[in-house]
Image (cartoon, rainbow, N blue to C red; front, top):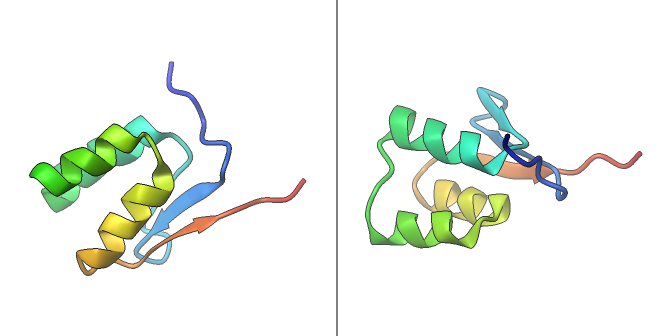
Length: 70
């Protein structure tokens, strides 16, 4: 079972994708956007949605981390 991210939700392309689970974000971005290569693998190795957000922004996708305060 995938662990939910404690830091918030990764929102890509103004809500086209929303991820709270790191593994789901990785799988979808690899399949839908063709992400691969050494820099992508470094982001994946980080285990951090913030790193995936930065990578996505650097590759012409709009991505941000949304935090929810309860």
